[in-house]
Image 1 (tube, one colour):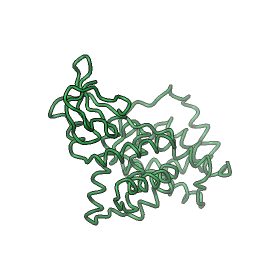
Image 2 (image 1 turned 90 degrees about the vertical axis):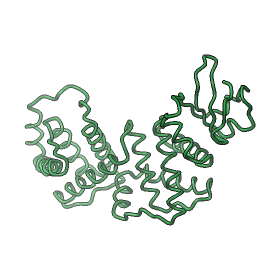
Image 3 (image 1 turned 135 degrees about the horizontal axis):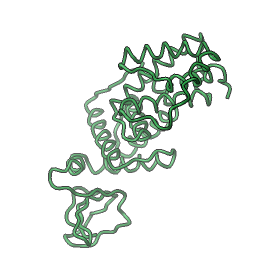
Image 4 (image 1 turned 90 degrees about the horizontal axis):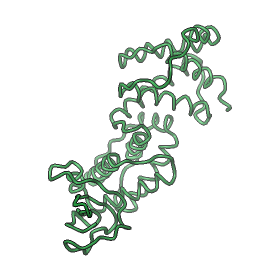
Length: 281
């Protein structure tokens, strides 16, 4: 690949042997290069197909600082090393744009703290939140910024998005509130506090997240439909869980206009029963 021009120290426009133009990112990837010189491809950490002056990729990269791009790459390296989360190019740009704006907000003394939301995020996305705290600390260290603790919540959303096949931050915030409402319903109906450390709690939250993402994206559910008689059997075997799922159905209808189908009810009855009766596992 041959150098065309720099956007900043960590972003450059290059051309490959077939004449295709690419935007490449990497620490010092175009530093000191002159037009037509081959670049050190070992420095390339991410590449985007250039699509002209109106390309949103180009617009985003030109709008953020070189230091932001460096911090974004470092953050993603940490995330991918410490979890199964993988960032595609779209999610990379979304995170870079978020980090850049977060730094601007912090310089202006703007703090988007919501303590109730922070508690819900810590409860529902424990692993992602723990990792998000480390990411924010890393960004502060690399950029010299002083991002407030509220950024840990917003960073958690980006991690959840990357796990959810491109879900939007707004959808993730909506999912957080819906899941928190369902957890409250379960706890109220059973008169207990769920053990957030238990495997069954983690599995319950994972099922709810997958269900929410599927509904918000209008995707078709995976797999064949269950036997129609199975719901009646589950309702008979686990009556309290079935009543709880009725309350969840009413909640989702009120908040989102969603109606649980028989398969949804079967899986939810099982998950509700497990999370309320087998919290030690």
